[in-house]
Amino acid sequence: MKKLILGFLVVNLLAACSSAPTKEKPAENAAEPAATTPAAETPATGTAGSADVSAQTLDNAAAPKAEAAAPAQTTSAADEAMTPPKNSVFFPFDVDAIQDGDKDVIQAHGAYLHDHPERKARVEGNADERGSSEYNLALGQRRANNTRKALVLSGAHNDQIETLSYGEERPRATEHNEAAWSQNRRADIIYK
Image (tube, rainbow, N blue to C red; front, top):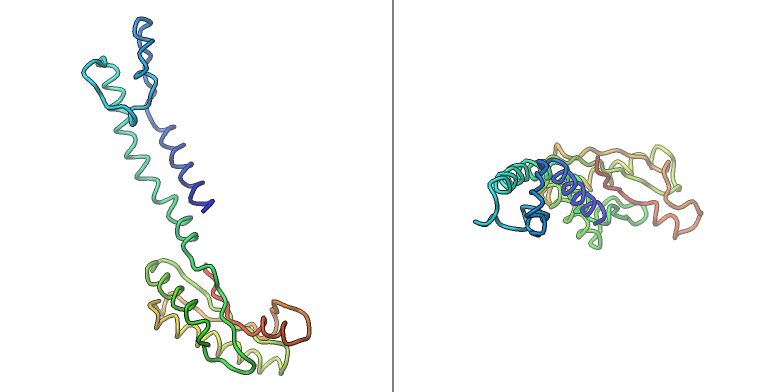
């Protein structure tokens, strides 16, 4: 949300910087408040002088150019704000199948990737410390592959997702108990 507001402020700043400077009215018309308000807020009236009308026309002509630049700058911030908040799915001991409790997470990411074909993601499979390194690497890869398949079934495209296994090498929790191990048996969806 902060990125969206910041992007909006940047767009407004760019629009203000790109507008043509207005000429000041002679001293006799200085008391008229319409001369100091922006052209976007007040419509052109028949009482305004020709210099004011041309300044308003320049302001109105410059505004679409600044607004046209705005979507390119705020799109990535808006896209990042729209990514699903949860990016991990968890697995029971020695299991590589997606659990029912995580299907909502998978569907949200699949729909997001479907709606944003320019985005790429990496699914990183992980395992707890129990078992050999080779076994845990293979289990992490199966978890990543199954997560990828579920994302594709939820709308993502095959070429948007790559998989990688870290096995037991990147634990989220370092204790040696079931609570820690359950946090380490996961697949993380990371956007590039």
